[in-house]
Structure formats: structure tokens, C-alpha cells
Image (spheres, rainbow, N blue to C red):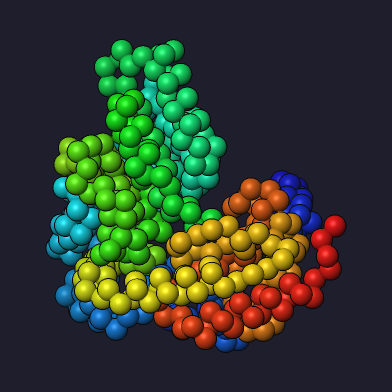
Length: 402
């Protein structure tokens, strides 16, 4: 039977403790979730500012349904580009501090569309080895020369760029170099050295493509993201930056956008297949996002409280046999090592009424299975302390590592 191959593959996943199970969440997102009928204190979502169920955002979506209906019914280039989409793109450009923005249905679609529009055969893409899967997929689909450098190793990246310049100078018209990096890495929570990357982009005449999925709305004094965090919004080489951010994390809704120089964005709009050949996102999503952006802009206390929870967790949790990499973001990894032990931690937490996902390869490198603690602005100090006490108690009951 042709299905036997898949049965074998599934069995191999199970034996390696890599088989994943979907859980059913009842009710709205928040710091407490009902999962498979049981209530949990949850540290599992990317709703960093607690906006996924904010009353103003919900109300904006309801008003849009009454005015625009549910579906857009066509692609943006046909008849699906509706007033909320147009207003959202203007608002995203203003908010991000960049000249123009285009709205995509998801972060995956945005990255695939961005990379396949801006690079093609003969071009060169240089990417951090821990970039998100959709950046890697976009690079591969572009058919450009795809080179990866060790995580955060700007010395290695510089050597790759220098070798490319020496061995194959950009004599051909239109040949491009693209440096591509997450801003906040989704499994480690660390922040890329964007000033260093931009300096290399200047030196080697490259574009710098940034995926700020986990920084937008959170980083920077006003939540403008990683560019604001590093003071790059008014940088002299700002036109080299192509900025992508998702809107289903800190913004609490769905979708993504790409922002940058007017001509770059127009080219993406004209050529990105993931934009051109798909039905536009429901207008109620765009309307909800407009309200979400307003809240991010107005409600500075949410970010301030989130930073307090991050500092409490990062400074206070002490574990003997797990690695706790430094992270100043809402993503706090607890690296356990092997898959079975990560699953054990997650299961023991669930027994205590706490939901934290176990992340295993291929999402993370082999041997670095972990718990991914995700903090949000609606967690209280008591919530965070309860998690730390539970983690300490579970580790105390483990046998000593070999």
C-alpha cells in the first residue's frame, strides 16, 4: 500500500519523541486557557500584549462585519482591496516609521512573497542559521544563491560577503545581495545585531531584510519594534532596510506586512505571488488591526508591565540542570536537552495546571529541546512566581543527568 510509507514515518517520529499532538482550546486567548476541557495558567501563546481578546479590538471587528461582511471575495488586485485594507496599510507605514507598507494574509506568505520578489537566479542571499523556516523557504524558492552563517556570527557573514565580492563581483546588471535575519529569534528570544547587519549591508551594497515578528509592538519605547529599539528609523541607510512584521502576535489579530522604500514595496506588490494570487484577508481583520495599532500606540503601560514580568522571570529563575540563555524579550527558553525530558517537564507542568509547550527538533537544533515560556502583559507577578516554583519543584525530582 502506498500509505505504508507514511505509517513508517509517523512511527519513527513517535519513537524519536517528535510526534506532535494538537490540543483543543475552548474560549478566547488569555493568560488562562481551557485546553481539552481543563483550565490552565498558560505561557504558550505569542499574544504578548494581551490584545487577542481586547474589547476594543473585538468591537472593531464586529462593526466591520456589519459594514463589509465577512469575506473579501477576491484578490487585492481584482476587487478584494477594501477600505479597511487601504487604511491599514497607511497606518502601518506611519506606525513603522517607513515610507510605505503592504499587507499580507500571514507572516509565512509575507516572507515568501518578499524574498521571491527581491531575489532570483544569480542573486545572493546571506541568512542567519537560526532564521525562521519561512525565511529559509523563501530563500530556496527564490532560486538565488543561498548561504547561511552561524547564528549571530557577523564575522562569518562578513567573510562570506567579502568572498562573494572578490570571486563574483556584481558586474551583471540587477544582481543583488540580500542579508536576511530575524530581529528576535523565535526559539531563543535573543535580538539580532541590526546595527552591525546594516553596517555590513552598507559596506557590501546589500539590502537588509528583517523579520520582526516577535519584536513588533513590544520592542522600542513606543512599540515600533526592533528598528526603534536600535535607533535605526532615521538612519542614513534606512532605504536599504526591508522590514516585515506579523500582526498575529503582539498585535493580537492576524496577517503581516512588509514596509520600506516606496519603489521596493511597489515591486513586491506587483510581483509577490503570495499577494497576487490569493484572496484578500477578510476586511474585519484589517479593521481589528487598525484598532489594535491604536491601542499599542496609546497604552504604554502594557509594555511596561510586560518588561517587569520579563525581568522577574529572567532574574529570578534558577535551575541546576537546565540551560537558561539570556533573553530580554517575552520569549524565555529553558533548554532541557533531549526530547523525552522536555516532554516530561511539559507533562509535569500540565499536572500542576500550567501550560508551557515543549519544543523539539526540527523546530530547534538536535539536542536543544526546550520549554518555550512566553510571557504576556496580562500575566501577574503571582502567575510568574507560580511557574517558577513549579519548574524548580519538577527539576528537583529529576534524576541527576548522566
